[in-house]
Image (cartoon, rainbow, N blue to C red; front, side):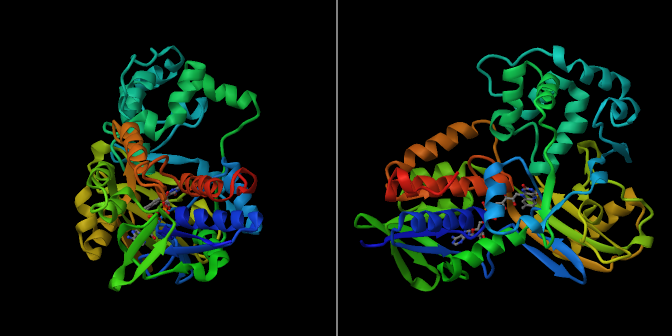
Length: 462
Ligand SMILES: Cc1cc2nc3c(=O)[nH]c(=O)nc-3n(C[C@H](O)[C@H](O)[C@H](O)COP(=O)(O)OP(=O)(O)OC[C@H]3O[C@@H](n4cnc5c(N)ncnc54)[C@H](O)[C@@H]3O)c2cc1C
């Protein structure tokens, strides 16, 4: 039996999850497979990169994921990483927003809702009216801001939801589609007529809030374990430049002019990075892919002596509301969130800068990013002393923005790809932006490919 030649472009968590699941599928099917994962950069993992420096555990990108996806949890167990999981500390349930220059507790129940200065009394009353809010307008794709204003009122939409959107996706709640970015919200409304009622229904079924998890040595633990299983199949420092047809298959040109032939190619890179690869092959597909926009983020990790921080750091951290006009989207108190992130007597903070509010920040030299991060931290937490450790990571296309029309764009990309059998895309530009989504997207693509290659019986488990 001639081995099927499959090339996966991109060794982020999407591409690695896909390749690992496909390798597993081939093993189960007893089918020969020639699998190659091509990665442009010198290291695997993409955004998921963790490093221990000066005793601090620094995350360049994602720092956690929710335990609500059984498929992701099963993958972790199957890789023998279950014992390496760490749970967010219970105190991390306390989250803050910066409003009017002051840190205000984000309400997480009736008691905190009554006492928090995050909302005015009027805003609180309007939020409590949520179960009686009007239903969605017919035939209109609402933005997150419109949805939130309709359900919980203008003040909570601005102070709580817009800030959360900046924290989760670095985006603008006035531009993002609620059904594309947060489908769970529209489903809760559709099924229960109210978000509050939906939450009570969840609880009555015994489903509490999801737990926030990471690994003892950070999120790179998972990508590292996947890459280790793939061994020599992963080639770093190998950027793909173009893709063209070669008979019934594909020819990829990589850096330095080398070529590689494949029966199936999956592009597990951002739509923005996929577009130039298919420009000559299909300009219409390339232009549709270009329609997916991104927000950039700069991450400034700062390690301090605990005594140099005049704040208890008793929670997850804070999100900055838009009227504060800061470059900081939010600050995660990493060493309060997960155990083992800083040496004894030290604290680690990660300042997230830029997003759609301040796109210029990603262009600023690193020294300027650190200055902005420190100035804004000093305004909020009163830190004056210099940090003991500084790391900066810049992600110009950090998170895909599912703006109004995303689902149509996504469908147009799928339609167009039908013209190119053997060529596929997956990852967080399409069906969800989180780490969990990335793993699920890669594994779904592996199942689809396995089905095509070996039929129904020999598919990697969902
Ligand atoms: C700062 C930041 C914080 C985040 N925090 C969280 C969080 O706390 N929780 C959460 O759930 N999610 C978070 N996310 C989102 C999460 O990181 C992503 O969902 C996930 O890591 C995306 O993985 P991916 O493999 O799809 O893409 P990427 O990680 O971007 O990987 C794509 C890979 O493809 C490679 N590549 C690109 N072009 C080519 C080419 N032409 N040839 C070869 N290789 C190529 C790239 O070098 C890269 O390694 C965060 C993201 C960022 C940026």
